[in-house]
Image 1 (tube, rainbow, N blue to C red):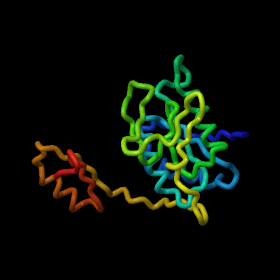
Image 2 (cartoon, rainbow, N blue to C red; image 1 turned 90 degrees about the horizontal axis):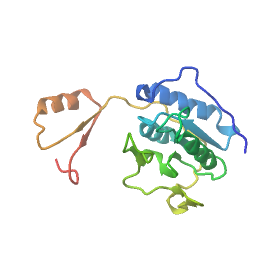
Image 3 (cartoon, rainbow, N blue to C red; image 1 turned 90 degrees about the vertical axis):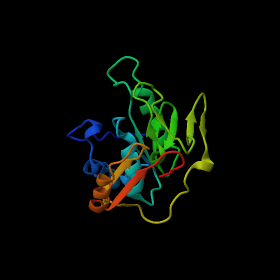
Image 4 (cartoon, helix red, strand yellow; image 1 turned 120 degrees about the horizontal axis):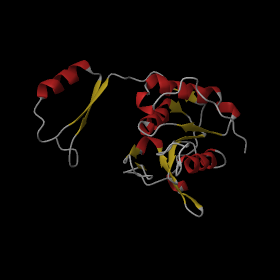
Amino acid sequence: IRFRVHEFEDLIDSSCITLKGQQKIAKTIQENYRDYDGFVVVHGTDTMGYTASNLSFMFENLNKTVVVTGSQIPISQLRSDAVDNLLGSLIVAGPLQIPEVVIYFDNKMMRGNRTTKASSSKMDAFESPNIPPLAVFDVSLQVEWNRILKHNQGQFKVFYDMNQNIAQISLSPLFTNYEVLNQMFHSSDAVILSGYGMGNL
């Protein structure tokens, strides 16, 4: 397996990434799509789940593996988890041919748009609450092929025009500022309400 490293000129902290930065990642993959079997995106952990999710919705008819990974401890420090995460990602992106955007972290491969960062202090920083891991790296590699998306028909495309005028608010029993909520409904194209329990409002 052969790899090529592409590094962006202006590196930023992942907490500063915007849709423009995610579009830049998507465009780089699109420009190199025919030349490689898979892609690994090295990303900061704070917004890794957001980028993986957005990429999964930007890519249409994806038939190659796109792995987003990073580390809790920088690669320059002792005990860093960066090397293991990077090597595992390269194994996933190369021979496995999984037509999805996934996150690989701490020996687990999870669906990109179902993964969230659950801890800032543990090596096992990411979890997929509603879908079990797609693969687990123990002594042997265990891939749950029945959970993997099927290969797509049609030409690979990238959807860049994503709507950013979307608001999100978490409700609680103590929430009473309905004026703010009313303003959000009138100024946003969509409002995501996070309820409690089974979504009771």
